[in-house]
Length: 228
Image (tube, rainbow, N blue to C red; front, side, top):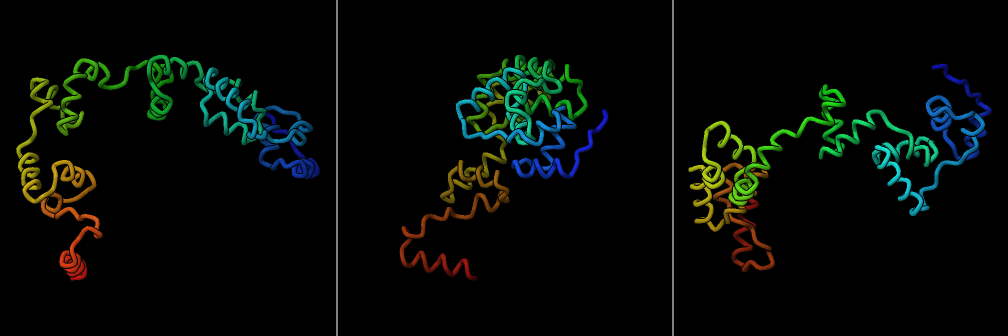
Protein backbone atom coordinates (compact mmCIF):
# COMPACT_ATOMS: atom_id res chain seq x y z
CA UNK A 1 0.00 0.00 0.00
CA UNK A 2 1.36 3.43 -0.98
CA UNK A 3 1.90 5.76 1.96
CA UNK A 4 0.58 9.29 1.56
CA UNK A 5 3.02 12.05 2.49
CA UNK A 6 1.71 14.59 4.99
CA UNK A 7 3.45 17.96 5.12
CA UNK A 8 4.60 19.78 8.24
CA UNK A 9 2.07 22.52 7.52
CA UNK A 10 -0.75 19.96 7.48
CA UNK A 11 0.46 18.48 10.77
CA UNK A 12 0.50 22.02 12.20
CA UNK A 13 -3.13 22.59 11.19
CA UNK A 14 -4.06 19.28 12.82
CA UNK A 15 -2.26 20.26 16.00
CA UNK A 16 -4.24 23.51 16.16
CA UNK A 17 -7.40 21.40 15.92
CA UNK A 18 -6.31 19.22 18.84
CA UNK A 19 -5.33 16.28 16.62
CA UNK A 20 -1.95 14.65 17.18
CA UNK A 21 0.57 13.75 14.49
CA UNK A 22 0.00 10.07 15.22
CA UNK A 23 -3.77 10.45 14.80
CA UNK A 24 -3.33 12.18 11.45
CA UNK A 25 -0.99 9.51 10.12
CA UNK A 26 -3.29 6.67 11.19
CA UNK A 27 -6.36 8.35 9.78
CA UNK A 28 -4.72 8.85 6.39
CA UNK A 29 -2.52 5.79 5.95
CA UNK A 30 -4.41 3.17 7.94
CA UNK A 31 -8.06 4.22 7.79
CA UNK A 32 -8.01 5.74 4.28
CA UNK A 33 -9.21 9.22 5.22
CA UNK A 34 -8.46 12.24 3.05
CA UNK A 35 -5.76 14.51 4.44
CA UNK A 36 -8.21 17.39 4.78
CA UNK A 37 -10.66 15.35 6.81
CA UNK A 38 -7.86 13.87 8.92
CA UNK A 39 -6.48 17.24 9.98
CA UNK A 40 -9.80 18.98 10.61
CA UNK A 41 -12.31 16.50 12.07
CA UNK A 42 -12.16 16.71 15.89
CA UNK A 43 -11.49 13.62 17.96
CA UNK A 44 -14.56 11.95 19.39
CA UNK A 45 -15.85 13.37 22.65
CA UNK A 46 -16.99 10.47 24.81
CA UNK A 47 -19.09 12.63 27.14
CA UNK A 48 -22.25 11.69 25.29
CA UNK A 49 -22.74 8.47 27.23
CA UNK A 50 -26.03 7.49 25.63
CA UNK A 51 -24.61 7.62 22.09
CA UNK A 52 -21.45 5.89 23.28
CA UNK A 53 -23.41 2.98 24.78
CA UNK A 54 -25.43 2.60 21.59
CA UNK A 55 -22.29 2.46 19.48
CA UNK A 56 -20.64 -0.01 21.85
CA UNK A 57 -23.65 -2.29 21.46
CA UNK A 58 -23.42 -1.88 17.69
CA UNK A 59 -19.72 -2.75 17.86
CA UNK A 60 -20.49 -5.91 19.82
CA UNK A 61 -23.09 -6.97 17.27
CA UNK A 62 -20.47 -6.55 14.55
CA UNK A 63 -17.92 -8.69 16.38
CA UNK A 64 -15.79 -5.72 17.44
CA UNK A 65 -14.75 -6.10 21.07
CA UNK A 66 -14.75 -3.18 23.51
CA UNK A 67 -10.96 -2.79 23.56
CA UNK A 68 -10.72 -2.63 19.77
CA UNK A 69 -13.62 -0.19 19.56
CA UNK A 70 -12.07 2.19 22.10
CA UNK A 71 -8.61 1.99 20.56
CA UNK A 72 -9.99 2.83 17.12
CA UNK A 73 -11.66 5.96 18.48
CA UNK A 74 -8.54 6.93 20.40
CA UNK A 75 -6.53 6.58 17.20
CA UNK A 76 -8.89 8.98 15.45
CA UNK A 77 -11.41 6.73 13.70
CA UNK A 78 -14.99 7.96 13.44
CA UNK A 79 -17.05 6.31 16.25
CA UNK A 80 -19.63 4.83 13.89
CA UNK A 81 -16.93 3.48 11.60
CA UNK A 82 -15.14 2.03 14.64
CA UNK A 83 -18.32 0.16 15.56
CA UNK A 84 -19.21 -1.26 12.14
CA UNK A 85 -15.86 -1.97 10.51
CA UNK A 86 -15.38 -5.72 10.76
CA UNK A 87 -12.25 -6.76 12.55
CA UNK A 88 -10.00 -9.64 11.57
CA UNK A 89 -11.60 -13.00 12.44
CA UNK A 90 -14.97 -11.28 13.06
CA UNK A 91 -16.93 -14.21 11.56
CA UNK A 92 -15.00 -16.83 13.54
CA UNK A 93 -15.23 -14.69 16.66
CA UNK A 94 -19.03 -14.69 16.47
CA UNK A 95 -19.00 -18.47 16.00
CA UNK A 96 -16.82 -18.75 19.10
CA UNK A 97 -19.29 -16.72 21.17
CA UNK A 98 -22.15 -18.89 19.92
CA UNK A 99 -20.18 -21.95 21.07
CA UNK A 100 -19.64 -20.55 24.56
CA UNK A 101 -15.98 -19.66 23.95
CA UNK A 102 -15.09 -16.25 25.38
CA UNK A 103 -13.07 -13.45 23.82
CA UNK A 104 -9.88 -14.11 25.77
CA UNK A 105 -9.99 -17.86 25.14
CA UNK A 106 -10.60 -17.36 21.41
CA UNK A 107 -7.64 -15.03 20.85
CA UNK A 108 -5.38 -17.01 23.21
CA UNK A 109 -6.00 -20.11 21.09
CA UNK A 110 -5.01 -18.26 17.92
CA UNK A 111 -1.83 -17.04 19.60
CA UNK A 112 -1.01 -20.65 20.49
CA UNK A 113 -1.23 -21.63 16.82
CA UNK A 114 -4.82 -22.76 16.28
CA UNK A 115 -6.57 -21.73 13.10
CA UNK A 116 -9.41 -19.21 13.68
CA UNK A 117 -11.98 -21.90 12.84
CA UNK A 118 -10.48 -24.38 15.32
CA UNK A 119 -10.32 -21.67 17.97
CA UNK A 120 -14.01 -20.95 17.43
CA UNK A 121 -15.32 -24.50 17.31
CA UNK A 122 -13.19 -26.80 19.48
CA UNK A 123 -15.00 -27.38 22.78
CA UNK A 124 -13.17 -26.20 25.91
CA UNK A 125 -11.07 -28.88 27.59
CA UNK A 126 -12.93 -30.82 30.29
CA UNK A 127 -16.28 -29.28 29.27
CA UNK A 128 -17.92 -32.69 28.76
CA UNK A 129 -16.31 -34.02 31.95
CA UNK A 130 -17.54 -31.03 33.95
CA UNK A 131 -21.09 -31.52 32.71
CA UNK A 132 -21.11 -35.25 33.46
CA UNK A 133 -19.81 -34.89 37.02
CA UNK A 134 -21.33 -31.53 37.90
CA UNK A 135 -22.83 -32.69 41.22
CA UNK A 136 -19.69 -34.51 42.37
CA UNK A 137 -17.53 -31.50 41.44
CA UNK A 138 -19.61 -29.28 43.71
CA UNK A 139 -19.11 -31.76 46.56
CA UNK A 140 -15.38 -31.89 45.85
CA UNK A 141 -15.19 -28.10 45.94
CA UNK A 142 -16.97 -27.98 49.30
CA UNK A 143 -14.39 -30.47 50.62
CA UNK A 144 -11.45 -28.35 49.49
CA UNK A 145 -10.59 -30.68 46.62
CA UNK A 146 -9.56 -28.90 43.43
CA UNK A 147 -10.94 -29.63 39.97
CA UNK A 148 -7.52 -30.92 38.86
CA UNK A 149 -7.29 -33.36 41.79
CA UNK A 150 -10.82 -34.63 41.22
CA UNK A 151 -10.16 -35.08 37.48
CA UNK A 152 -6.91 -36.98 38.12
CA UNK A 153 -8.53 -39.28 40.67
CA UNK A 154 -11.36 -40.24 38.33
CA UNK A 155 -9.55 -40.38 34.99
CA UNK A 156 -6.03 -41.45 36.00
CA UNK A 157 -6.46 -43.36 39.26
CA UNK A 158 -9.84 -44.96 38.53
CA UNK A 159 -11.60 -43.72 41.68
CA UNK A 160 -15.36 -43.68 41.91
CA UNK A 161 -16.59 -40.09 41.41
CA UNK A 162 -18.07 -39.80 44.93
CA UNK A 163 -14.88 -41.18 46.49
CA UNK A 164 -12.82 -38.73 44.46
CA UNK A 165 -15.03 -35.90 45.69
CA UNK A 166 -14.89 -36.78 49.40
CA UNK A 167 -11.54 -38.44 50.12
CA UNK A 168 -9.04 -36.11 51.69
CA UNK A 169 -5.38 -37.02 51.74
CA UNK A 170 -4.06 -38.35 55.05
CA UNK A 171 -1.46 -35.61 55.28
CA UNK A 172 -3.95 -32.80 54.63
CA UNK A 173 -6.38 -34.22 57.21
CA UNK A 174 -3.74 -34.72 59.91
CA UNK A 175 -2.22 -31.27 59.36
CA UNK A 176 -5.64 -29.64 59.58
CA UNK A 177 -6.30 -31.56 62.81
CA UNK A 178 -3.05 -30.25 64.32
CA UNK A 179 -4.01 -26.72 63.25
CA UNK A 180 -7.39 -27.03 64.97
CA UNK A 181 -5.69 -28.22 68.19
CA UNK A 182 -3.58 -25.06 68.03
CA UNK A 183 -6.67 -22.87 67.80
CA UNK A 184 -6.39 -22.39 64.03
CA UNK A 185 -9.46 -23.19 61.97
CA UNK A 186 -9.24 -25.59 59.04
CA UNK A 187 -10.25 -22.80 56.68
CA UNK A 188 -7.47 -20.53 58.00
CA UNK A 189 -4.94 -23.36 57.65
CA UNK A 190 -5.76 -23.89 53.96
CA UNK A 191 -5.84 -20.15 53.28
CA UNK A 192 -2.34 -19.87 54.70
CA UNK A 193 -1.09 -22.74 52.53
CA UNK A 194 -2.67 -21.06 49.51
CA UNK A 195 -0.81 -17.84 50.37
CA UNK A 196 2.53 -19.68 50.40
CA UNK A 197 3.02 -20.46 54.08
CA UNK A 198 4.97 -23.60 55.00
CA UNK A 199 2.79 -26.41 56.39
CA UNK A 200 4.49 -26.19 59.79
CA UNK A 201 3.91 -22.44 60.11
CA UNK A 202 0.34 -22.69 58.83
CA UNK A 203 -0.65 -25.21 61.50
CA UNK A 204 1.34 -23.83 64.46
CA UNK A 205 1.52 -20.02 64.37
CA UNK A 206 -1.43 -18.63 66.37
CA UNK A 207 -3.94 -16.36 64.70
CA UNK A 208 -3.18 -12.73 65.63
CA UNK A 209 -6.32 -11.01 66.84
CA UNK A 210 -6.98 -7.28 66.76
CA UNK A 211 -4.57 -5.70 69.25
CA UNK A 212 -7.23 -3.56 70.89
CA UNK A 213 -8.82 -6.71 72.34
CA UNK A 214 -5.54 -7.92 73.91
CA UNK A 215 -4.88 -7.63 77.61
CA UNK A 216 -1.93 -5.52 78.75
CA UNK A 217 0.09 -8.69 79.43
CA UNK A 218 -0.74 -10.16 76.00
CA UNK A 219 0.31 -6.93 74.31
CA UNK A 220 3.62 -7.01 76.17
CA UNK A 221 4.23 -10.62 75.14
CA UNK A 222 3.37 -9.83 71.53
CA UNK A 223 5.79 -6.88 71.58
CA UNK A 224 8.59 -9.05 72.99
CA UNK A 225 8.02 -11.78 70.39
CA UNK A 226 8.15 -9.32 67.48
CA UNK A 227 11.26 -7.50 68.69
CA UNK A 228 13.27 -10.54 69.75
